[in-house]
Length: 314
Picture: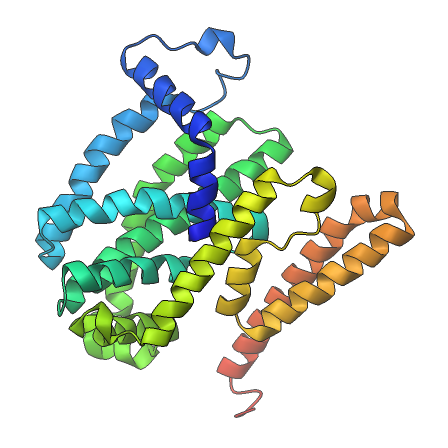
């Protein structure tokens, strides 16, 4: 969190420029003609036209469905903007979106603002975590389209239309699968149970978090800020030896098997690049993608075989 927000703050010139473009778009003085790629990019004006009504809708939905007051509902949307920046940066650097970590930041915040209110704690965290996740997923899709030469504006329109069809399919399917709390408990979702446990633990306020944990958060935040500043100021020959704040943070969040796999893969890729740079630059990503896809397919096959009872209780 500290690293992502520090990097965002250090890019204040880019932020000011972006805000200026928003103002120009609202005033109708867009300079699309000056940018040769403007006709395929998503216009800044679309951001303004979409952000305002969607924010209002989100606040109303939180109030109507979960009795979250307007101020806290607005805060969840505002926090989502900054947490989405962090999630997008983490996804860009590590290809992992720390959804759980984003949600925990919101849960800690609402433990102070709305103590003993478990519903507000969970649902506000759900808003920020899912917005951050969707933002990072959208960037991944756009990057894939960019590599394939797709039109970014058409991609955005297709995904926007897909939101409505997705809701029409997923919401009824969800209620068919999970009509009540008893049905949900049968699924025993580990991630959801963890979120609930955090909300229950924080129901007495932020002081319920152990003092050592709070101290650890401060130390980690200072480390993230320091590494980001050093990385920005260090010469290129030094930067490649600096550890990634995102990588360090995520290595504490994901299971050890994943962190170890990342390390082994990075070492193999490094050795390959040292032996044959040209060959490695061509085949490293395809081979890595094949390994990821192969594991996913095999896990799915094993799950189906297990569900069919062919593997017994093993």
